[in-house]
Amino acid sequence: MTQSFIHIESPNYLKLEELPNPPDWKGVFGNENRLALEIGCGVGDFMLKTALDHPDTNFIAIDFYNKGCYKTCRRMDRHGVTNVRVLRDEARLFVTDRIPKGSLSAVYINCPDPWPKKRHRKRRLVNREFLEFLMDYMLPGADFFFATDFDDYGIDVANFLPQVSSLENRFAPELYRHDFPGYHLSKYMRKFLAEGKQIYFMHYKVK
Image (cartoon, rainbow, N blue to C red; front, side, top):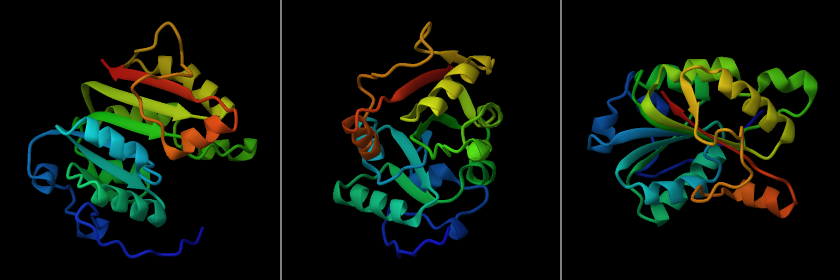
């Protein structure tokens, strides 16, 4: 898909081509705080609220869409947020190339593309293979959060997550919940809820 490019000038935006490989995240943020990742930051409203709640965490927010990165940066800039860095990249490639193994204290994935047509579902980001891959980059005790409004996607992820042996379900014995007090709702979640849809929330910890 061709994207119309928006030039981004923000202290919170990192150009991928200017980022060392591997990056020195402590140097980027100027501190040794724990590191967390949001995959698919959208317009940045979830990340803003979460970063403000956790000033002692450094957040990396990535999105494939330039427009989403632009809107996220504008939101961070308006609120003077300094513990978020925004980048545009594909999730698996970014994690492989730019995240040191065993370094993430949390990963957030909210309402990724559900690829609703059956012939396209193999394109979904979150599957068991991706979760097994992600475990190498997370710390023991790290949090994994997943949310979707798409019934089939939610049930599919809820069913395979218990099979990932290095994860512990924080909602057990429930596989998912439709309400998650304290977890911020993104613009898209609020839109889906207003349409009468349910959100499937999942929260796991790395053992």
